[in-house]
Structures are given as C-alpha cells and as structure tokens.
Amino acid sequence: MSLVIASQLDPAFNDGLAQHPSRPVVVGVADDEPWTAANDADVLLVVPSPTWRRRPSPRPHLWPGRLKWVYCGSAGVDFYPEWLLDAPLVTCGRGVASEEIADYVIAAIYAQAKGLEAATIHAREDWGPRPLGQVWGTTIGVVGLGAIGSAVARRGVALGANVIAVRRSGLPAGLAGVELVGSTAELAARANHIVLALPATAETRHLVDAEFLSRVRPDAHLINVARGSVVDQEALLHALDEDRLAFATLDVTEPEPLPEGHRLYTHPKVRLTPHISSNYQRVRHRLLAKVQDDISRYLRGEQPSDVVDRIRGY
Image (cartoon, rainbow, N blue to C red):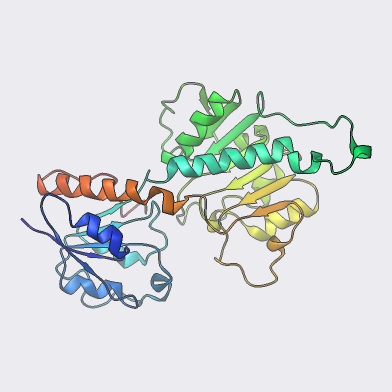
C-alpha cells in the first residue's frame, strides 16, 4: 500500500519522508488552502501556519474528502479549526519538542532565581558581595503532566527542587520525587515557580485569572509555555503592577503576535519571547522520525502514537 501524503512541511522534510520504506508519494499543498488536499491525498500533514487562522467556517463541503488521516506536526491542535477533527484519524506531534521546551523553562527559572544580569559589575568600585537566589530547595509547580510537564518535573527533581504538580486525569505522577496536589489553588499557594504546560481547551481558558493570582506567593514566578489563552493577560498585568506576583516569563500570548504597543512588550517584570521554546529547527529530525514510525504502525494495521481525542481536544 502506497500512501499519498500531502504535506505543509518544507521540501527537505518531505524528501526525507519520501524515503520511508513504503515509498509514499509526498506532495506539497496549496499555501493558501491546505485543506483542499483532502480531494487527492490519504494523509494530510499540517503545521500551525497563519493560513489556518484564515480557514473557512463552517467546514468546507469537501472535508474530509478521501483523507484517512490528518497528522498535526505540533503538539497542540487548538490552532486548527474544530472541523479538522472530523477526519477519520487525527494525531499530533506530542513529545517532539518537550525536552527543548523543558530546557527553556529551567533556563527561565535560573535566570529569575540567580539574577546574574543584575549582579554583573562594570567597574572596580562596584566590587562587593551581592545576594543570589536559589533553585535548590525551592518549589516548582507544574500544571499539566504531559510530555512537557513531565520533562520539566524530571529536571526540577534533579536540580534539588521540590516539585509539585496537578494533572487533569488525577492519575499518579509516575515520576519519582514529584508530589501530586489536589488543586491548582494549592499549587498556586505553594510554588515559587509556576509552570503552565497544559493544553488549550475551553476548560483551561483563563485558568490563570484574578482568583488564581490572588493565591500566589508575592515572590512567585509564572512561566507559560502552554498557550496564551490559558492566562488572563489583564489580570496578570494587574497582579504584576500590584506586586502580588514577582515576575512572568511568557513564550506564548493571546493573540500572537501581540498588537504594537501592548504593555507586555515593555513591562519590567515580564520576559517575553516569540513562541520559540520548542527550538523547532533543532527538533525537525525528531518529528520526521516520529512521522515515519507512525506510518509504519499505520501500514501494519496498528494505531499511530498520540491520537487526538475529539472530545477532550488534545
């Protein structure tokens, strides 16, 4: 069986995909209407390009056409229209960038805790002791224990931090040294560093709101590597302005990019990066390997990895 795969990825990636032992036919898609590939392909490999923000609503009449499978190169599927999930099978790239994102989180924690930039001196008269913060012995709270949250938790334990976590399923963490807590409210009250690593759904929208922020420690550091929609940005700014939250590291916002002149660009207590924590160019080979492995599973009649649950939305 030779699959026809329509891919939004770049030609080099597609050339690698075509080397799969089954020799699939890999074709590009129309940049402005990638969903039209449903007419001619068995598999559609998509990425969260700006095109999907301009997608038609309601569902195109041709969708899902002859498609058997939609493969989302990203971990989250919230970027795409709901009708994308009407395909017979939808999977995602969960786990591909989790280690890179976890590294970003730990870098942000150390940057905030140690404050080396503020401690740097530029003249002899500046010489003298300066206090540095600690990571060892502090509490890192992780909201969401999927691939990213688990990678953060493992690093936190290795660094001597107390790691607490909350997860939707309520299942045991399965990670040595990680304490599951009963609620986000408890996590907010205990953590020095609060890491958001959960999917964007209707239930998680503005999870971090005024009530959540009223419970955090005044020295707390909020890190969002999930989605911008998880945080009520006005409530966040208010908490920062009133010194009820010490700092925020944001790799994601709502919308992306933020409008020119938005306060998050220049707020002294905010570190804002342009959704780069996945370090995508460094992990493309992992995505290629994952897609190739899933093609092999599919052709053997097995279920590919990381099937998206239409009801849960991830």
